[in-house]
Image (cartoon, rainbow, N blue to C red; front, side):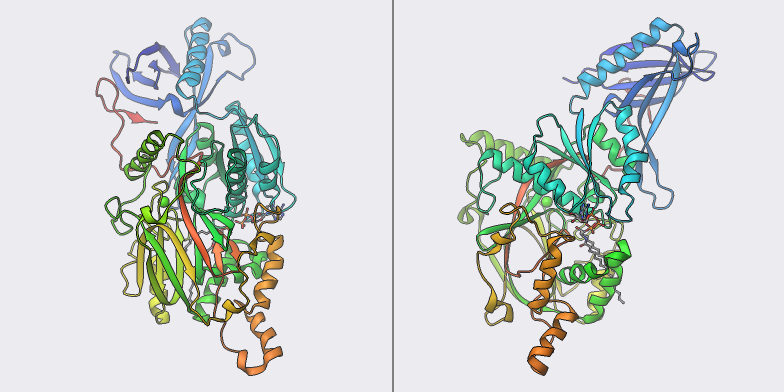
Length: 574
Ligand SMILES: CCCCCCCCCCCCC/C=C/[C@@H](O)[C@H](COP(=O)(O)O)NC(=O)CCCCCCCCCCCCCCC
Ligand SMILES: Nc1ncnc2c1ncn2[C@@H]1O[C@H](COP(=O)(O)OP(=O)(O)O)[C@@H](O)[C@H]1O
Ligand SMILES: [Ca+2]
């Protein structure tokens, strides 16, 4: 029952103004009262958004002994982009007596404990000092660490010295004391945490990650992201803005956002997990190209994007997909997945029901293609084939690859861009930066799916040296050597070149050995899997609903009605 009992109320002063302050289990409100005791504006802070309470830091004096400061989440707008940001609000209250001050401190701290129980107390933080503009350590020390300290969160901080250190740490070290893991970096760093957390959970549950038909165990350990990378798409799409303070506050208040994850398999092995982009053709080529220009920082994507666009390539392939239930939602229904999204909540309800009716729980049960419906097949030449489990919005594309995709509905959106003239493809790309519908083009199809398979038509060059089932050599969990950009990716990029897949250097190499016959453009591309290159075109992807949880709450709806108090009066929400 949602009874909002008053825990404490009294007169308090803020500066020279007198307020009537009320603490209930759910809210801390203070209402200005004028000299005639008439009520003016009320400020209301949900207890769940109180960051901390402190006694006055001023030197001991009678006045200071009657003061306390409440720190809380304050919503503001960014001046440049009009995005909703969270900042640290603070109000210093003065009490009539020291006794009353102590009562306020006790009650506020107690309310925090009992009404905000999901807050983390101990976190494991990984900082990539080389991500994005190389500001990770500075961002953490100057903006995030002071907030965690204020909130009483203790942190074990690891500044990484190599790629995959964070993933390996999570897979192998004792994590019993930690409530969550946090990365300070970009999507690549998030991906390391994702692989560590999912891998660890399956190890402990005794489940094989390589079997795409198995329902994996969802992970309890939460993941937090402090954006300090190049695209920061996972943060942007789950929080609505790339801002370290906003993200730190979501971690502090213990927000919990389930997230769908796609497992990518080749042959009989798991290759990687992805949450944002599994993309072949254009996005694969952009990623392969951009690795050569890493020194440019985030700009490498625009530069490489332009180069790859001008190459004007398309690739032959067979895309097969398992459609999701069209009754539940559609990628073209013009809705947005916002905080407390009903489509995602219904998916949660269905999962809970399935778990309760399945005596041995859903985990470890089989995902049978028969009961999941019929595969649909599309063969042709494509500019791009992309699968995304969420909108994949980012500053470069504020509505994302698929604006109506859901964070936690158990499906992904498959976007097929068939071969077209360069101007058409530019229109498609450009619409990602506006509010125009990028799917409303005759050469673009979008489907909401549960699984996707991609293969090459018979006779495509790459089929010849395709070696099914050998991925384990580079597999993620098998040998601890993931396909990382900065480490083994170097070696993979060389393999890609040797196979004559994507870049110009590879063509030159072939030209030298085979002469003119091989100067044609490569017939296969690579997959871009959340920023990592997968050099084998034939893959199977399966979406796992709500496999992990982030310290986030989805994008908050700015048009939501104002809060009202228990007496129905209008409230100013801080
Ligand atoms: C004409 C303007 C076209 C703008 C097209 C914007 C499409 C943006 C879609 C972004 C999807 C992002 C999905 C997330 C991917 C990340 O996981 C992943 C890794 O991120 P990290 O480095 O932070 O670790 N990032 C990426 O894969 C980056 C993909 C970026 C693609 C940028 C494409 C720019 C295209 C520019 C075309 C210009 C044409 C000019 C013609 C002369
Ligand atoms: N200390 C390190 N040295 C080199 N590479 C690292 C280090 N720490 C993490 N990485 C790797 O760097 C890659 C890019 O990191 P990320 O933080 O995503 O930045 P960006 O968004 O700029 O790509 C990731 O794939 C990650 O595995
Ligand atoms: Ca989804």
